[in-house]
Image (cartoon, rainbow, N blue to C red; front, side, top):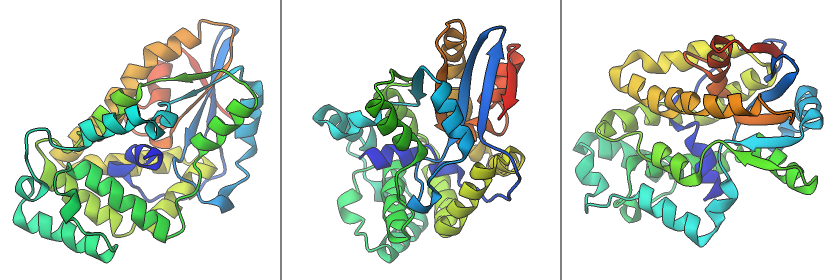
Length: 288
């Protein structure tokens, strides 16, 4: 369940990217106040550790660590209830009723190729079903290792560093599991197209993330917005959440405490990304 929540942030925006020599860690400052923001990959194969040195530098400077949401809650009974609340249709609708016959068949074919029977998932929304299929595909490809977020969550707990969160688990689930609303067919078709090359694309994302190639990430993130529905997905998954986080980041920058903020790398690329929004507010943004 924890993995499903981590996967959700990347579901609709899988990209390909090229490499450049840089990092995915930034220092945000105004006067004497500062914090660090680092772009993360929510699932990272073991061979990608250790992380780039800039992550360690920022962590060592940080008094507290900030994450998107507290994924530990997903392993509690309350977290499971929240997941079911947002993952399933509450009005009796079924997946094969919501999707067109052609789209459902495509989804069924992909699931079968992964060894998954769609029948038990027929009461769930496409968002959850695709997350499940993605998890299985990543595990089969050996790509479902501990992500950057979980690495630092475990480290911060061991070091007794204070933990803060930008969203509640329910807020995140309500976004991630409702992106397809009213556009289910397009959502499934676009994501099935990306999932067919999942392993290759994830490796390319990791390459761009590790080298801090935000230009490539930005260009390819925006490519997803070529359709009207794609623009809606981009707005819901990234832009609206970025805007919701800015007031919290500004409050952090008013204290002496130095935070390390860890968010998915795509929140730091493309239109209306977090770094761009902070620059518009007058903060200095410096890449490590």
